[in-house]
Length: 248
Image: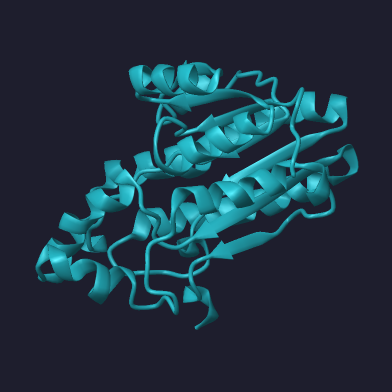
């Protein structure tokens, strides 16, 4: 069983969904967890439940992160947003915002955390990517672009951090039962011209050999293992949890 007593962790988008499940798992293993989220009240409520601290942060405001110093042993880059549109209808400002939140901000947080991790000789960077970091789907140009970029960033961090005891890995889930996915159903129905009740069987789960949504606690279990000592030789990797989607 992974023990993280004495370790400090920061989880972005930690007030709900995958982030909350990761925060709960890390806290249960003994880590001191900071829940970073744009929803300040939700972050405070979640932090209170797990005995952690809250950090209200807007990851779309990358200028505010440029000079950040982040003193943490474990960084979980999880925060994300989704927007479903054909490329020709995709608003440029929305595209830029999504890349700031899901690619530029992870870069800035990694940049802020690496010096302290290097000094202590220990660091775990866990990037919650997606099967869309390895595969593409129509109408998701910004999300797919950001996640593909995150995969490359994660590998560079692995190469630069290895000699300092720092690992960097991606987790690549398929569709997870989260508010982010639930909000997509109406957008997917509109984009594909089908009823909402047909989105799961006809769009979201068609590529998965196991036709169900991933549960947040399943993703968190992998994040917990990657955070521990047993994974100290695991770095630069991308772990799919997609029910077989990427096996095609």
